[in-house]
Length: 300
Image (cartoon, rainbow, N blue to C red; front, side):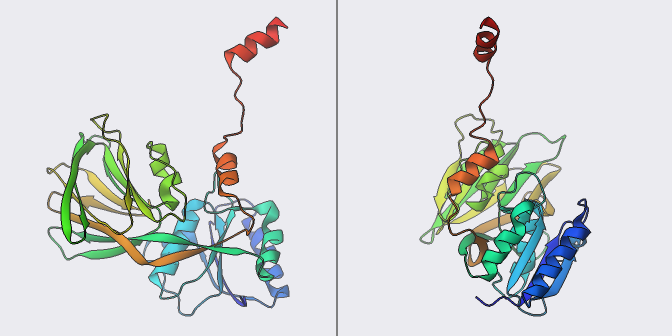
């Protein structure tokens, strides 16, 4: 892959970011690459900019939220641009490269020593009862949740498979998450949902604090269409897409979720072990000091 045209999407309120960006641009110049698109993620609160030309690579400087903003830029364009993430945030499941190893990994990328993972995208057709429908592309998750003072909400859930619509359940809960495998380690994980291998295309339905404890997360194949609707009219219920775009929901509004024909191309290390990432990011190998350890230490 010949890399000449670069995009940089960055989180601006990071200490010493200007120094890092200047060092990055110097590196790219030495590689005969030019920065054709550069934007601060804070400026994406309004309309997502449309790319005027194809790029060979987008470099994300930030956390997973910044990476999600980059996916919005790519999906709004007609170009399938690979993305590589440099983690300036906290956990960073999507921004896999550390700042310390940034230039080492970029050197490998320019030497075509990398792998590309194609990640599933959700298509969301939002049909407000009082307005025309709107389409959105989502990388991580679709979330319905209640406001701070709202009571438990009911969400009528159906799946459509082979042109047959089937009732799943009315979930009475604080909300409902529909996640992609990439999003399974985000809000879905915090709500008790399963971790799903990133390249295993599927939908994960996870109720948020369900009223009925037997309402457990459900993993669905990627060839179904999911239909969601409020069971009753409740004030202050919201629909959020990737935690970045939000709407107030009313009874009669329809949310139709299906797999998109598009993918996000994520540049990653050829030798990456996904389970290494899980162990590191989730702290699986951190041994906790228990009361037994404490007693034994002081007894000795």
